Image (cartoon, rainbow, N blue to C red; front, side, top):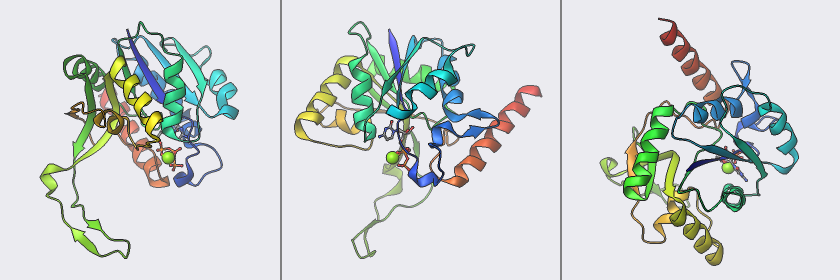
Length: 232
Ligand code: CTP
Ligand code: MG
């Protein structure tokens, strides 16, 4: 069994809108609906757990109820940090599930074939993350904004989601993080702390995470291009 967790319980502060970014419309459909449909289109996915902000749980139910082409889903209340939202989702996933993927609800352009690749990677390597090579040079800076170091670009990758794990490894990583009070910015970082090696799978730059206003323009343009390509 394969379950996909979709953390959707953020506030989208950097988007600077009244509405949580995962509920904003993209070509007339809420971001979260696009993401749920994309995940559902992956044949190897059995079900989906969405972590929604407590005050948005009802709304998410309404958005997904009656939608065609959706894998079995449930909604749980998320927490104040992404990591806590995922921890809550983990509590409702039965022990019979062998592979768990975590995918940001704010990445609606994920391709179903990429999800399949991540599931295969979790089976082969136990822990895997979708990633793309850096396009820009990265600098490490001090608190005054002066450059400390330029890490070689070829060794640096940008992490995306999905990140995919065997269920026992992800659960152990979350247990350990809770015990240590460790807060990470992605799931792989929790797993790395266990000493487990995380395999990176090269993804696409189009798997954008909606973060700031300009990302909406980019993602809508990419969606339109996909539609045009399909009609061609
Ligand atoms: N997320 C979550 N619970 C939180 C915070 C984030 O489930 N407490 C989810 C978001 O809804 C999003 C994903 O995690 O789908 C990635 O997080 P991010 O892009 O940081 O979203 P937000 O936290 O909503 O945005 P911001 O940091 O700008 O406030
Ligand atoms: Mg955030």
